[in-house]
Length: 465
Image 1 (tube, one colour):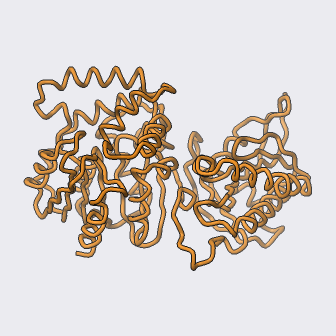
Image 2 (cartoon, rainbow, N blue to C red):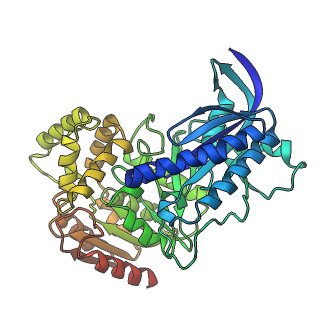
Image 3 (cartoon, helix red, strand yellow):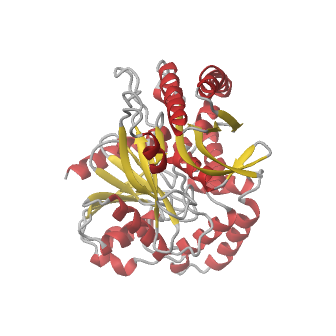
């Protein structure tokens, strides 16, 4: 092994899983063409070396910071131009992160903190864009008249210190398609950032859309990236982001946030929410909670009444299952814990299918399959079991009389996961609230549900009030 000062370029394809799932042969063919006709020549022309390729990206090194940047800009401009004919949800985008520092070279591979930072920078870069460290910026700022934007100090996942990050504006930085073609929002349109909660846990959050902010509270399991492939969430995200900037985050133990955490508790979930909102410096906003996200939203609104303009609750409750005087709770909970710990991560999706069936019984087989496959991506069996117990023991019923925010409450009439009586209890104890039952067996509203249009109409009217 030896050390060497190098500029490191880390790149990956945004939305790779979704693209492959939808059209594997076409995407892989275009990816191979881009790699052979654009990426390899650009890196070679600027004296770089490809260290390795991954399923959706590559890692390269350069002896010159300027060569690393110029090569990356050329790659982005050419690929973005080649992808213009494709609609937004079928388009290939690359994200690039560049850092410079000492790296360890060993048997054709590279290691070290410099490499880790480049990889983490790539994850917060815009689709079709480039993020660089201040060290790269200092090396090149007087050499070429690039259009830079300082993003300030950023938390990067699994990197202890904050990193001062710059964004390079590539070309027009707006590679959208013909305006006559409706743009379909996907995970590549969101901006992902990280912050550090009260106990040092890294929390990932995302923004998508334009307009005034609206916050979605996290629930049992989420994944900022993979939820866009879920038939449970993508239509809801697009609806909220149509006229607003939708902000959501993965709670601890989920998605892009830290999985290996010191503790998981309802109070820490609340601290995580406050951390994200404080990081964004938001003044006032509507808050949308689903299922376990409802008591979290209620607790936040009571603690921060000046922040929340409207509260939207769907399929929620004030008391978790352990607090509802159910004589069968202990046995049912023990059985579910066993099933989670033994079946959550298995290739055989038997338990996840059982869980999906209780959540969305009216879903199609395709919707079910996508949902139960995302379960094991979103969190581990150990975390799923812990979060389930935390949610079972929630009790915010004493806070309801303190809540004085306009509140819209939805619940599906035949919800098997959370009985409709729980939302009726919320409506009876929250001032200035409106309760709307939705005729459905699902725990969540699907785009294929007959009540979907009613849901949208009621929210539009509510947010205008």
